[in-house]
Length: 502
Ligand code: MV4
Image (cartoon, rainbow, N blue to C red):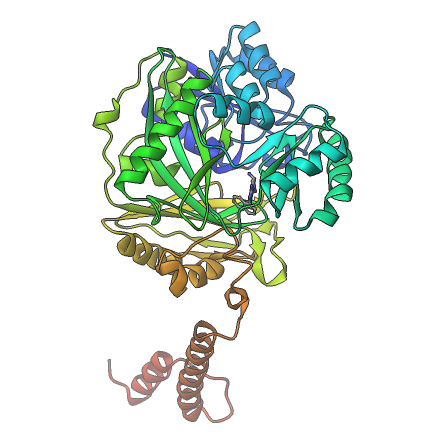
């Protein structure tokens, strides 16, 4: 096993990895930017190395500086977390050259899945259902239009080098196709240096369902069930849950088998996620594979009792998977809310700044993966996610009830945040009914109204407090005519003293 691991990341995920390393008796090395000098991951790590600068580009994306730090500290492995260098094969290859283990999948698998056209082709060949569509290296407009007509409008144009919602374009009608196609090509070239685009049948209001897989370096592949991630905003997930309310035992087996097929097809050898879209008929299609640990991994940990970071580290060290498919049991239900320092009332604009007060929830079935503390200043330079609150319950109803209780307990002062917004989502009848799709937030503007009972209740409580305060102070004033108000204790003590008793 590794002796010392460097975490090439920041915030809650760096803290999450450090906690696991402590559980495993492995030394940890943090790296930090100027803005992250006082961050939690720096405090928790056994060692920390400064990377000068503030932006991600200057710091957490500087592969060579990070490798140098790892070598200097004697780290034998690097954990990339998510984002930053986690899916950059140039970096993982450099780690190998320097004799440092990259805790993640092999570069071949990452590259195959990183190119969305290749991924589609590999998945098709492996018998995995993909969205009806087509992909080309170089195609003229006329032929592309013929293909689009065959698929049937609306269609979606996507950049081969894109993913995660970048470089997508919806084409509703045939007469818009030509301009959309050339625009998509030039946009793709500008954004990714690669003009290749592909075409898919556009699915209306799909659900986003993803399957967690784990594969070791000995060729064993298992799945750990699905997560429902349909509650998103601008391709940022907001709430995730496991299991999906739209997946029964039979579909879970089928999705799991497909995800394992996908992992096998690219010789996957780490923890990873196979994303699917489910249409309104309940049909599922492969979308993309994420070749990293994901933000929402805690909900899978809750229902399986497994530690996904530990699995990832053990796999990277060459150990066989610690569980067989038949040992994996799904118990109960879990929900996760991403707590962001952003203002839902103002188009979710980021709200960095000093956290003047913080009181976080706990108790039965509650977990808070946080990267902040009271007195911490949320920097302007990075993603404004400050914590992930997750709950477990025996049923979906229980995990939601616990989440509502936990959100009620969550008190954050000094910055705008989305705790109230989460409460409105969780209390929404359609959410509680499990009637979810990727347009949920856009199609429910009432989630943004401030004139709800929550607000009125707060006004009533504040009014009652003011009245009580006034009643008390006015009786105190009655004792001492034109003197300033004196406490009733002091007044009582003075009266007693005047009477000469003890
Ligand atoms: C789609 C789609 C509908 N039809 N593809 C968005 C993120 C990227 N990974 C793929 N995305 C979509 N692809 C077809 N053929 C709708 C989306 C989509 C979406 C997908 C998952 C979660 C949220 C989404 C929000 C808007 C659009």
